[in-house]
View (cartoon, rainbow, N blue to C red):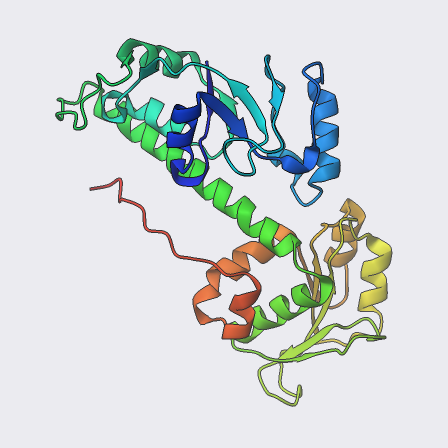
Length: 308
């Protein structure tokens, strides 16, 4: 049994029912052949949507595939006709099944337990009452809490991925400004180098505006997919003096040799990867200035306290 989502917030569910179809967007792919294999589909998707990380790419060509560039639902050209025969009230499903159906993927295969749960509660269309009376909890409390905990962890992981994607979509100068903004939120004054030769230092930070107070922090920012190696670290640290503090930010990460070079350096050196930059952004987001927040707009999410 497969799950296909009817748009954000189920916005297309009525159209799916009215026209007897399921559909997805990915219009940049163009028309696909029903014989297209999964590997070829993933390759085409990577070319058409290069901004999406590989871990986000998923999908498979279904039988009876139809390409409708002007479909019944706008911007959902990949369709499959079907007959909607049954429906299930969400409230009668187990917590585990509800959490599974709440996943964010457009299309995914359901687990055996979730499929059985849906099948056992399925009724003919039109026979499900508008309001389902609350039923006594049939699941053990421990199982319910375990399912909630799994959903919380999944949601946090997805949120972390989305924030890292938002950072990755910035250009190099915006990432440089983001790093400088985070340092200001931490209480430092910053000086950002103008575009052009910067003698290996993109940002200078210190407690005072003149850069004379300790600690003096020298920052290099590299926003590219390639990892930085020991050669780049040595070039950055050249000319630094005892007492200087150095940060090297690389959204593409670092090689093992780069970490070794930083560890044995004569001056204190910290290497910051994309996940670390994301954590710093979240930790200091409330104290960021308006310009820095605008680079990666975030919204606070409240979640029910499982301890209650």
